[in-house]
Image (cartoon, rainbow, N blue to C red; front, side):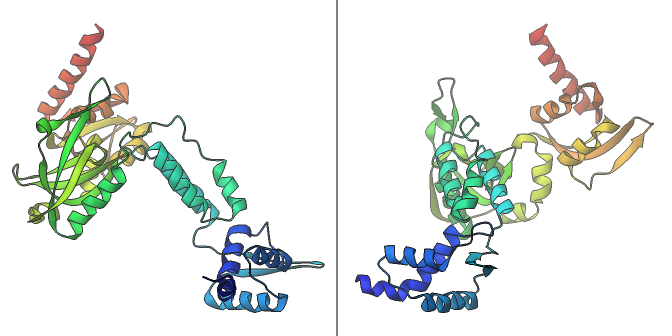
Length: 329
C-alpha cells in the first residue's frame, strides 16, 4: 500500500493510539496524536482530528474530553474489560496448573493488550509464574480444539493416553493403542482440565485428563451414548467425583464439627441438607464416588469429620486409615 493511502486509515490509527496510550490518569493531547500520526507517515490537521474523534464517538468508542484550563486532552473511558476484570483474568491464567509456563506468559501478554500501556504495567506487577506448578504438555491447547471439533461435528475421537514414570518420561497406557470414545464435554476440576466422554466398549461415561492425551484425531464414526450423557448432571458429576477418581457411586452420611460448615458447602454444594447433631456437630447426606481421594478429603479434617454410613463405606474408610498408619508404624 502506498504511504499516501494510509491517510484513509487515519481514524483507525487514532483509535489504536487512544486505546493503547490513554486512560483516565493519562489523557493524550491533540499534539501527541499529530506527532504519532506523523511518525506513521500520515499528515493531519488539528481540525481533522477533532472530526475523527467525533466519528469514533459515533462509532461507539467512549472518548472523554478533559478540559483543565490550559491542558486539553482525551482518553478512552469504558472498555470491553475493566482493569479489575483483567486482573482477574491474569490471576486465573497464572494459577491454572494445566496451562504451561510458556503459554501462561503468552496469554498474559495478550491480556495486557486489552488495557492501556499504563494499566498493563499494573498487570505485570501481579504476575507470579516462575515457581508455580504447571503441566509439561504444551499441546493441551490443540487437544482442547480437537475435542471441541469432535463435539461440534458429532464424531468420535481417538487418542493415546499416558502417565508419567519416575524418570518423568511418558508411559502410554494400553501399550500405546488408541482409545476411541464419544466426547461430550470439558470440565475443570482440582486445577486440571478433563474431557467427559462415553466409552462404548464399557458402556459408561468416563473422564480423561486433557494434558495426558496425545495424537487426537476426529473419526468419521458418529458419537453414541447421548442418552447416558443427557441423563448426567455435569454440576452434580463434578461435585461428587473427588479429584475425578473413579469408584463406587454411593449416598454417604457424614458427621462434622460445626466450624466445618463452610468447607462442606464449598465441596458438596449449597443445596446439601445440613442437620444439627447436638450443639457441636452436624450431619449431611451426599452422593459421592467412593475413592481414595474422597477418603483423603475426609481425613484432611482429622477427628473433626467422620463417615457414619453406610457400613461398608465406614469399613473401607477404616481400612484406608489403617493402611496409611501401617507404613508409619
